[in-house]
Image 1 (cartoon, helix red, strand yellow):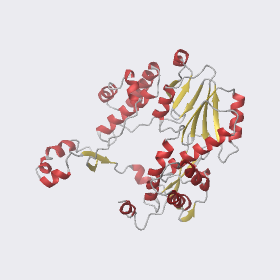
Image 2: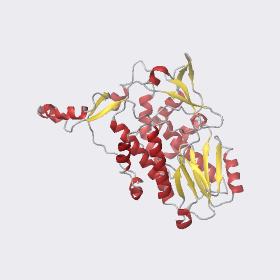
Image 3: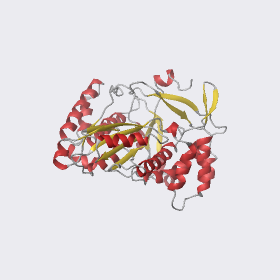
Image 4: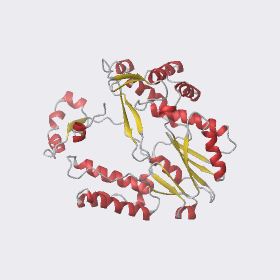
Length: 392
């Protein structure tokens, strides 16, 4: 089965393309290097290795899956009045991971019987990391240092390497954090030390292979898309408060309501953003203010008032604890009916289901397609697709 899956690699494979994504939120905009490996020579190998590395990365104590995971950590952590909040960022993590260091880090974490012999996994990692060739301006290059941003296994690999670095830094320091959580190259920590000791710790940490920038505060700091601060809940329950964080460059240019998108996508966006605001605001007051601002922004993008009201009426602050629960993804296999959305065919689902008896009345087809399909819309070409290209 695995051999068959590997053999489905495009032949000949596509040459990975190098491009950059500009970090416009930085004071001095810089480019984030990306190597698009879609249909590339190591794409499927990278998917396979990622399946083996993810469980190792996720079992680390400092690992954060996403913002919801981080918020749950904050909700369960009591802190003292003098606790210092520190948010750290690794400078150019992916391009600064020494390849040999990363491979050796994996071996140290694999302290149980692996699904495949460790030396095979090491060889596969070596192929993915050391044979990362790409094309830029019609010239071919080979990345000789760092990890490729764009390959599937890069995130798990970086998480494992960061845990290794964290362990080394803390073990060699007299000053140690009370809590340490990381989401790839973003780190949040709580300290019962003074600012001078924390600053010294960060200076010592910068003597390792990677460099850190840090925001140290007695009252509040930003982490991912949240602001963590000492507010009313902290004063009453010794649990840090949370509110939504927006970067200074955020313009809230939501997809315009008149754009050719299925109604379910529009209502899904409204509810999804409302649930994000619900999770990321620990105070009812800040949640209601955020929802009010969200409504105004939707109205500015010409969203239907009835749709806004109906969708947002499903999200209530009293249900916040339920929204914070990590839901298990269903493994049920559902047949997707894939097509491109067109506004003139709004009732496609009804048309499909009204004729589903044609499938059910055929014994063979009925045994194969036991459940009705779902409509899955693929994105149609936009002006951006026609006018912009990543390849230079």
